[in-house]
Image (cartoon, rainbow, N blue to C red; front, side, top):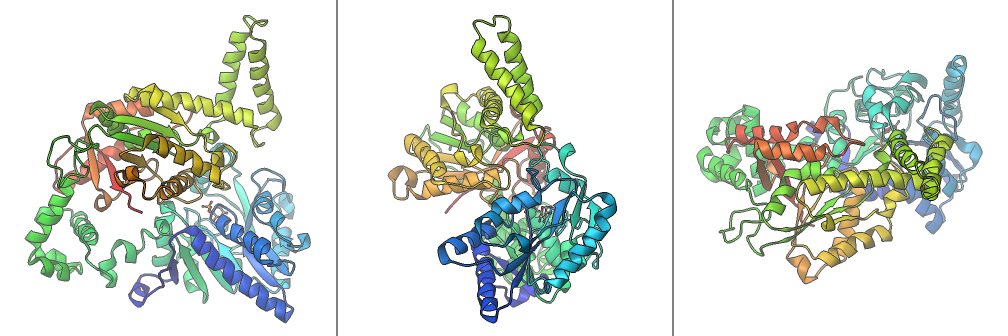
Length: 626
Ligand code: GLP
């Protein structure tokens, strides 16, 4: 953990702690809770915990369960109040927060059922007001919340206090923001299914807790966390109200801390070390801020932005500019696998060996094509031995309607010769029946998930083949954390790591491409990366591994900043069109915002604005070092 040091305070208005990863942050918080429980036990007083849902607190709950099981921590004297509940969902609904808490925490520890409190999503409308008032009264009667745990939604909400919630708001029913409903769409399979209302503790209710700890993991949360921590206190970001609480803290992992000033612009808080990476970041930032190509930046502009010391180190702006410009220019290469027989001293990838064995790992089908479709095609056409490995089936993204369509085709073709196709008829009919029985929100049975995964598999195969990958070099791992799990609740196991490890051991690649390292650790991409990482670490010292380079691509996440890029693969207009055709093979689910190739064009425009060569589109990579 990097403790907070003085110069950052100017920007950070909530004491903020950056941890290496979510589990270590969760362990720190759980230890604090344990100490309080132990202390109160000695005093004969209960502890009142304020709990949250979503994927963020899951590592914290896992640690509490561990403390209970392995260290005998008892929750018998603990009282809990949850922040919120979807309105209209019964307690046993698959997505109700009540059920979530049961599954993630309550059923694994010795909390007394009468000490558990959540708003009730089923109270009739005319009873909501009284129900909310009673919830407030119950918190007060319990003595108030000792430690309130919080996540943050991408709208900046705590609990479900959407933008516009006032600082003194109390427990109430309120409509959910469109962004919140989009974020929950995966849980409910589609946005229309997400409840429109929720009952939530108010901002005022939350602020009455004696201690508040807000947690956030992964790059997706970086922008909103920085707004809450550094921005003005405002109803537009209800988490910003933590700024005026006497004992509020933020626990972030590296990904979620990415937009804080101390991380993004360390020279502004007197934290610059002027490493080569930081120098590059500062110069490119200045060029973008001043809207000038790098080579046109002047001494005066550096001085005005707190970078006088940096310029002095280089003598003058010219020398600094040229160095960073050259480095940026050298990231561009048309040879992602290295250019054979060429001088590779300043190229991103080595010339030898040639051809290389390349392993592309896609956490979900489509990550590969979205993130690096153009590069895949180049690697193949330049003669490398390219293998694509889909780590999960991606079926959770597929609606029942898709499965129904496939089952019906199978049924109708089979019915033309019912004697011969008896089994198929049984299978297809069974699928249709399962969908009917489970309804829109029921847990999908394994057989249905398998069919959906096969639909996705077909699309992934078509896309990879259209980019030149040989059918025999496409693998589907179906990692168990995904096949057996569901959103926000995936759990990585040894079998996942073993499966990834065996691909590494079989192929012994010279290059690996993967995404997800700074993603939300509970997301499919985050877990898939963790599985890869463990498999990789387990092979330390093996000769092939010492020769292997790991390149990170961005998949569905927003693109790298220019300073982060170590390899930029340019694409011609035709190459981009070809990539987009491959993306379109994913008919059962696609991300409309990524279908037009604008992200790759934007990156090319960015390179152009920095003064490097002008291309139609670019795909970006970063080298991963442990
Ligand atoms: C929901 C919950 C919030 C939670 C947010 C973020 O909106 N009501 O309490 O903080 O989701 O969810 P996640 O932790 O899954 O990112």
